[in-house]
Amino acid sequence: MYSLVVVDMQSYFAASRFKRVRQVVLWEVHRARQHGWPIVLLEADDCGQTLGSIRLAVKDYHRAFRMTKWEEDGSDKVAMTLEGGVTRSKSVRVVGVNTDQCVYATVAGLRSLGYQVTVNALGCNSTSHNYGLYLLSKIEGVTIVNRVASRWAV
Image (tube, rainbow, N blue to C red; front, side):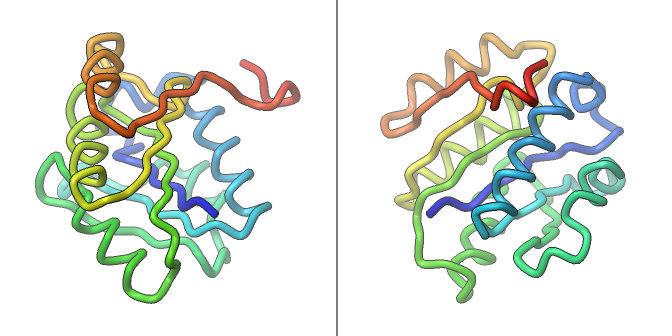
């Protein structure tokens, strides 16, 4: 079983406004709900709420949690939420922005806490997206995928 972590999908960040990224994040949310996985929406402090389409997709889902973070690495908030009785699984899927900053820092933090991490690269974005993917590829134990179901293809 996985948990889904959605990092900084707030309109404050230009990278979150790309249609492809929003569609893949929504696909991941849909998939998590189908499987009953916990969903953690990480939000950068003072940058507004997670995009409305994503908030709507988790509305009334009893395993969805919104957490505010005050630094790039939100792994402590994820761990606090998941290990607080939500799940025993240490496997997470990560999507969001910015790939080379908050996504990278959160993934690195999760790995240091012993989580197995899969990043869906299609659900991530930044002005330095390829560099962010390169950084992520250097973290031992991180799997990077580039896929969505065909009916959600972008």
